[in-house]
Image 1 (cartoon, rainbow, N blue to C red):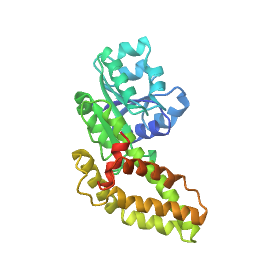
Image 2: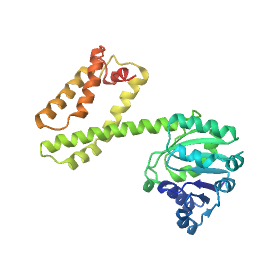
Image 3: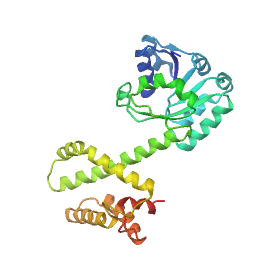
Image 4: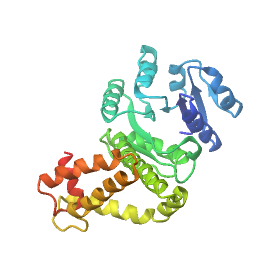
Amino acid sequence: MNKVTVIGLGSMGSTLAQVLLQNGYRVTVWNRSSAKAEPLVKEGAVLAPDVASAIRASKVSIICVSDYRTSYDILDTEEVKQSLAGRVLVQLSTGSPQQARDNEAWAREYDTEYLDGAIAAAPPQMGKPDATIFTSGSITAFQQSEPFLKCLAGNVPYLGEQVSAASSTELAFLSYLFGSYLGFFHAARILEADGLRVDAFGSMIAHVSQVVGDVIKYESEVIQSEKYDNPQSSVNMCMTTVELLMEQAREAGINNEFPLFAQGLFKKALDAGYGHEELSALIKVMR
C-alpha cells in the first residue's frame, strides 16, 4: 500500500506526486507529455510508458487533470479498462456533481472502487495542515486511500457514499467564496470613493473572520431547521442596509451592480411576505 500512481502532471498533479515522494511513497507517474515527468523521475518516481501500465503499477491511482472530460478521454480505452478491475481510482480532477455520478457508474462497470475528490487548496498549500480535500464515494476506496490523502492535505473529510457530495460541497464553498469576493470588491469601491485604505479594511476583515463564520453557522442552522420566525436580523432590517448601499453608489457615482442584485432578491422576499422573518428566509425565493 505504499505504491501510488499519479496520472496527470500539471501544476497540481506534479505537486501531488512530489509530496507523495517526500513522504516515502513509491510513485508511478504518467502524463501525455513525458517531459513533465523528468523532475519527478529525478526524485525517484517511475515513468510508465502508458496509462494502463501506470494503473497496473499500483493498487491505487490518482487522476488529476484539467477536467472530468479529459479524464474520461484518458481512461476510456480497452487496455485501461482491462487494467482497472480490483483497483482503486481516486478522481481529483475538476467536475460537476453529475459528472461524479457518471464516473462512479463507469468505474463500477469495470469492478473499480471509485472515490471522488475535490481539492480546496492551491498547489503551494498541498502537504500542509490547512489544505483540504473533500472526498465521497466508495468507503473501501476511502479507507485504502486515506493514509496518503492525509499526506497530501491536513484536512480530508469523508462526506459519505453519495459520490456527488465532494463536488457539491466544493461548489458550495466556491459559491460562498465568490460571493464574498464580489461583496469585498464592492466594499473596496465604497472605500475608494471616500479616500479610505482598502488594505486596512482587508486586515480588519481578517481579524473579524471568526465572527463572520459564527453568523454563517447560525444562518445555516436556521435554513436546516426551517425556523425563520424568531429573527436576529430580519429581511426588513437588512433591506435598509441594501437601500443604503444603493444610495451610496448613487451619491458616489460608483458601479451599483452588486447592491442592485441584492435589492432584487430582497424585493422578492418582501413581496412574498417574508419581511419579518430571519434574513436567511431569502433562500425561499431562491428555491
